[in-house]
Structures are given as C-alpha cells and as structure tokens.
Image 1: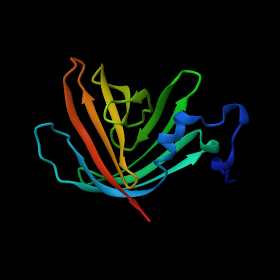
Image 2: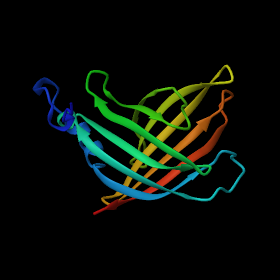
Image 3: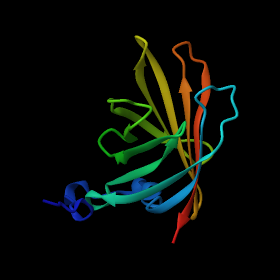
Image 4: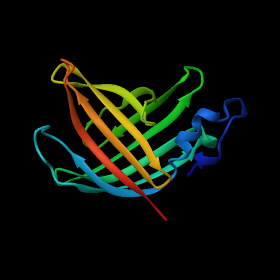
Length: 168
C-alpha cells in the first residue's frame, strides 16, 4: 500500500507563513559534500544527491539524500517543520553513518545569516555530544547544509558541509 503524504492536510494545522523558508527548499538537488572525520584533515569532496518535498499539505518537508562518507555508501533523511504549538522550527534526522541506529530530534530557529539552525545531541562513549545543523538557502538555486560537532566540553569542530545546486 502506498500513501501519498503530500496531499494529506488537516485544516486546523495548515502551514503558516513560517513554513515558507522550508517550502522554498523543495526540489531535486546535487553537489559536493566534505565530511571531516578528523577536524585537522583536508578530506576530499564526495557527491550528494537530494530530493526535498513538501508532505502533509506543506506543513513538513522531507529531505532524502544519498552519497558517500569515507568511501562507504551513505543515505539519510530528515523532516523539517515549524511547530506552531511550540513556536520554533524542528528537525528529526536519521542516517546510515553518523547516527547508527539513533534518531536525532533538534529544535531550531533562524540565524543572523538567513539560515535555519537546529541543535540536537547524540550519545558517544557514555557522553552527550552536540550536533548543530545549519541550512541556508543562498539563492533560489543554491542551498548550503553544514554541520558542527560539539564535544562534551563545548569545543566545536566542523563536521560536514554540502553545497547543493538545484537540478531541473
């Protein structure tokens, strides 16, 4: 059975003005990704393909992507929304490399440079590490997704940067 989530909406929860930056991300995208497994390294870029689509009547956008990390296949998905009840943006993310079998939830909001930033955390070695994801629509055809790893002591390290160009 296939359910078409794009058309399902409940009028009481119709998307509002705050959903506009999320809906602007809809489309097919591709471009280079750099993943720093060692913050002092200069890793090569790999290629990422992504599709971002509105679902649930435009209240949520779903992003699915594929690429490689350290020569291994990599895939992931995230859901983005503006939570009208909580008054903030929110992200749920899962992938085949960084999170293992985990699911990260991260509240977020706009930044001074026009991005949306989301701050979540994950367990590693018995400690909590932070993970900040920033999504910035540079123009109608360019989006930059970057991630920062935050050690338990607060030290920040660049983790991922993907520069996507709209396709078609």
